[in-house]
Length: 292
Image (cartoon, rainbow, N blue to C red; front, side, top):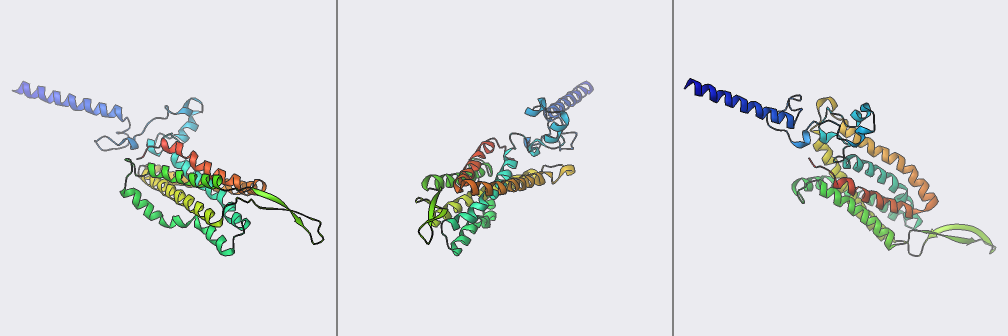
């Protein structure tokens, strides 16, 4: 009996030890970061940065800054599965900077009244009033198994399609006309809208659809950041959000002067094309996004 008892005790001890070792090797940092005995979720795994593309091309200190090993993998924004998060904020800033001159100047160029100019200038921001509703909707109505990823994809797709439709269904070019002076001579030239220029109503509708997709995708980005921020260790808490907002302000800062230059020299068409391309480019990183 005593022999059987010792044998069973030794067997149980070895089994338990083997199980702990397997869990330790599967998640090597469980014990270093004081996780519970149960296995941690993949989103909160601490990993090395040797599997990154830049590990073989940059000095270790720079790789450690881009992919810090003291934070969970899902908080490392520059990994392929997380790249959509900072890209989303950068795209928001770029589009806000690009659309400013276009929305404020082009309606006046089309001959809009003061009331129409005010309406068009504010119509893009109207969907921002429903950001809370967008958030609650994505929380409670998953689509294809995702609560953020698919909605962000659809939001940027909606913004891109609205601008593509505006480019293809109307003529955004400016035409040069010769002005006659009072004596019947040449009074110089000026720019005027083309015959196929969009009406104020079409322009407003396009901007409304663009703004709806734009703010919908923006809310999904904010929601993802809020969820990932819960996984940040205390030592780096807040860094995730500050990085994302820095991307947004950087995009806005460089896009605003570029947009002014492009509009003045090349007209509104190039601005609208860029407003269609940027959201479309977002679909690639969103496809690779790992949702927590």
